[in-house]
Image (cartoon, rainbow, N blue to C red):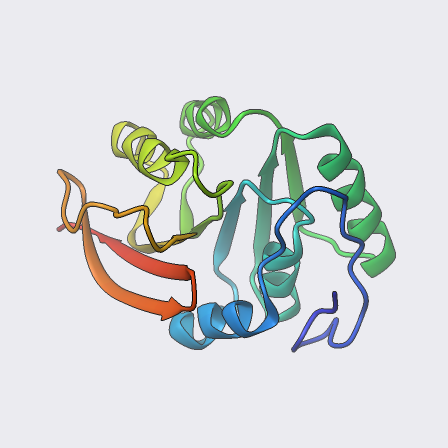
Length: 180
């Protein structure tokens, strides 16, 4: 897998075994939807290889925070950060819900939160519910959830509204904004 655009364009990204990487066309779609992310804070939850977050850095994100619980994935992410000589990265080796709680306690806030949980485990809904309870999304921030088409996410919740859905085969992107 390679970074598609920006300062790390065409640089290879190491992929750990046993993960489902975000396809190039879906990664491109995410960033086409987001537009200019220069200087924004980016959080990737269930990072796998960290490719989406590293793509965000390549495209100008100001700071990247990566959350992953799998040991092999953490090793791959560290290797990718080293290979790219990427700065502005914070890596959390924690379960997603614990990381969200810790980030909240540390008063962290993110302009973009990208979530790509394992498919067929109903984890997208669970992490959205966790985010409901912890205020880590900036006032005009977006949450992008990559999920399996059969996993239906709520259109509205107490704190978030669904503003866009995009479909790419079995993969869906659901984009949420914080309610005002």
